[in-house]
Picture 1 (cartoon, rainbow, N blue to C red):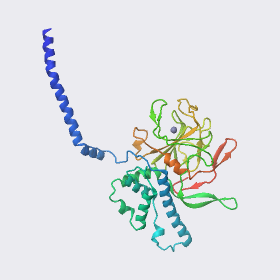
Picture 2 (picture 1 turned 180 degrees about the horizontal axis):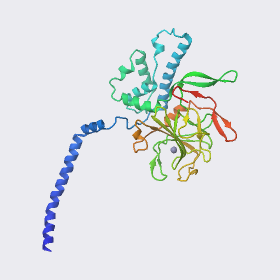
Picture 3 (picture 1 turned 120 degrees about the horizontal axis):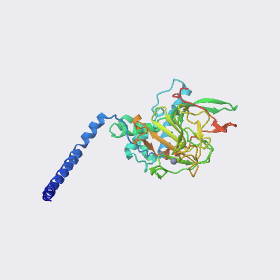
Picture 4 (picture 1 turned 180 degrees about the vertical axis):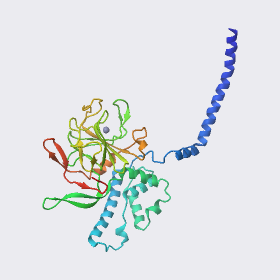
Length: 368
Ligand SMILES: [Zn+2]
């Protein structure tokens, strides 16, 4: 009993000292980590690989449209000049400026901090006037701290959308012939002449299995609507996933974008012959709209409203795949932008009820 009393007194005396010691240690640790935070992050960055870890894509459809138009018309002008005059094209400053829409967008992002909410066409006019007066993007952006970041992240989002390609066009005699083009070569994921509706539902909360945020855009439409590959690439995943149901994942050729198409049709989710490793071309039919998913069991319709879930993941480093650090962007404005380019389809197989594209495309980076 006596021994116990001494022990308690000793412990009571020791406890305040211990607490003081603990608080002091924590305090010093916090202060030193705060003071050295710059140094520590830079030294750990040296050890880690240097790649972009986060992107908020806030460019609105109007800004995408206006910059795309400048890019496309300036290239087309030069294409026409070259085909008309051959190699005798005079170097006329005004006709030969070729705009790059991603550079224009990256510049605008530096001016508005990546927030395009208050974007007006005047912002772009100011930049275009400067370029027409002979200033270069290099000069204009050399002191912009975040220009390289925006250029790289927007290139990851939009890199495969605009460029040179060949596409079949209907001739007067009814035949089809490939024509050289420069323009938008990414397609809306819903086939031409099929209606759909959507709203910006990125980040909304969903609760199958556990509470989580919605990392894409739902395009509501009729069951069986042909689903179109937005961009060319390789089928990376195909099959059942308890959240997405029957789904297809396509990786762009530059490996920066992973396109996710989910909830495809029960019993007939995919286009004929599509499998993991297949090459798909922008505008190809890859599957059919449905309501599968939210079930561990395969081929189950557990979604209330038929829709395509469309998502885009950015990959700057392979370590970001299947990790807690995945970057999914809000594609709502991209869908709005892509409404101007839709792939026309026809029933190509009466027996299997499959559809195929009407007009084929050729791109230089597709090797078949
Ligand atoms: Zn969805």
